[in-house]
Image (cartoon, rainbow, N blue to C red):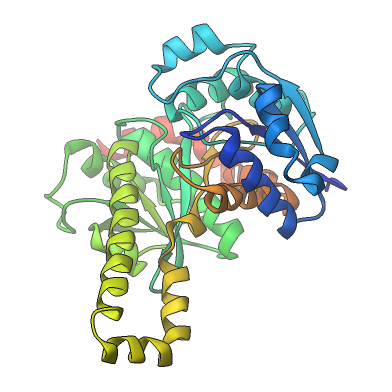
Length: 353
């Protein structure tokens, strides 16, 4: 376990760049005094922000980067233009070189995935990385993946997601055999696209001892906490994530409007202020910002591009926890136990047919 958690930041990533990344890092530092930061980006812009945060400046090193990857660049274009010299690439490269323990970026998701995959390489048996999010539910928390790393996937890919998500849930939630469900439009066996139905058959045929596959889970089951791990491909997973965030903001706005409508409602708010504040914190999307890229030989955290300083600080918190509690080595160890579970995925289809 490192004496200091060394965090590399893509200071130019996201919609607002250094103006959010630096204050976000300053907030994270207030919660974790055992961190050091490497900030990659335009040195003039980064230092201008750091001047307002002397405590952060004292534990940070600024590394100039000539190129910032824009949010609308295609991954292939970002690789051609920003490989070796962009703030995103350099932050990831710091992890590969051992100069940092984790990289955090709010930048272009596709570019981040492509650069992380090329630079850090994939773990054996994993074809594509996945973004795993810890999702608040009425029962506690669930791991949901993939929430946006890649679009589409066959049965084998979904089975790999189930294994990775199950390993993460074991470590995070201290579960011996977490329940795993596939996101689908219904719980009936005949519903859903072919890839999802095949993935269900594959997981049943594999009968892996480290996870309890419970079948299909509908969209409302995510918030209910129907399973410890909810598996879907990145397109639908990202839509589900953004829908949940939008709904949380919508309900919060409804409550604010209702509480200020009449003098009676204002009085009621005063008496119930503590409860409303607790509800607001529970529904705040910024509190759960930060998705873990699973399947890589290194720790990379993806923050929402449009988040504010508090949201980015939450993403840094996720990266800190991954390193401080050795979650990645533990997840990797779990993935490779019980006869190297991932290595049997390509052959498991034979048991279905």
